[in-house]
Length: 323
Image 1 (cartoon, rainbow, N blue to C red):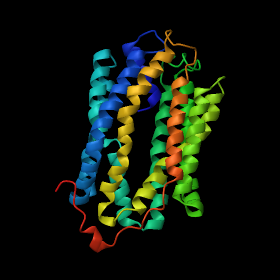
Image 2: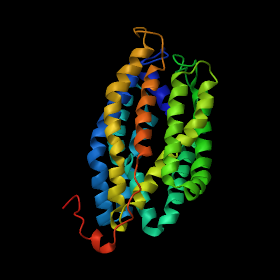
Image 3: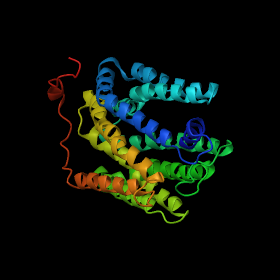
């Protein structure tokens, strides 16, 4: 479901007639923390199960969990149902967020050679972006209240417009640009370019001085999204053929960030959006995020060339996680 619609429903239910909602910020932070903690364990385990018992049964299981949260909000949008939605959403994200792509990437690695995998990962992320585009197109047609007055005086439709720009642009960059760039310069260079774009994106949003800046910043978001397929390509290239799902699961180490980031960012964002902020700078938390992304860029810069996948006789010696 579109991010703008969820934000609209949550704000209406928890903080009616208000433009900002600290409860919604903390609720989203709590969700990210719980999901982050659990994903650190769940994704590698699901990857191991997919390697042992097959991709299809695991995909059917985890995809089915994504149905129920949206069904709750389709019934009612009151406060109680919003809380129930977040409970089911936490369970669904623990099972499906990250693991769906990890197992899908492992399936692609099963049937494609090394040179074709990067393009396949780009297309998979591009199709995911297409679903976001469709969701935001629908969001623009739905009624809603103003929910971003605190930052840029944006309403739901303007926020959906930005998400649409990002979605359409990311389809192009991930499906067309990434396969070409990967052949020319390699996935490591693409990763570094993507992280540079992410730093610029965060700085622009944090320093936004007028309403057109978020639209301009969306251009860098389109490039930043190349970080995911390039990371998947790097991990797949360095993995043996029988452990693709497990190693893609370990690439979900970003779950640690999903746990740690809300501990800092949720109270920081809420503080600087409130009337009790030490100074008037609503985008301060995004500037802090830019420094964290700069650290990620440094580690991407010094990332060594990965060794090639091991031979089949070496693969058989690797101990499974669930042994």
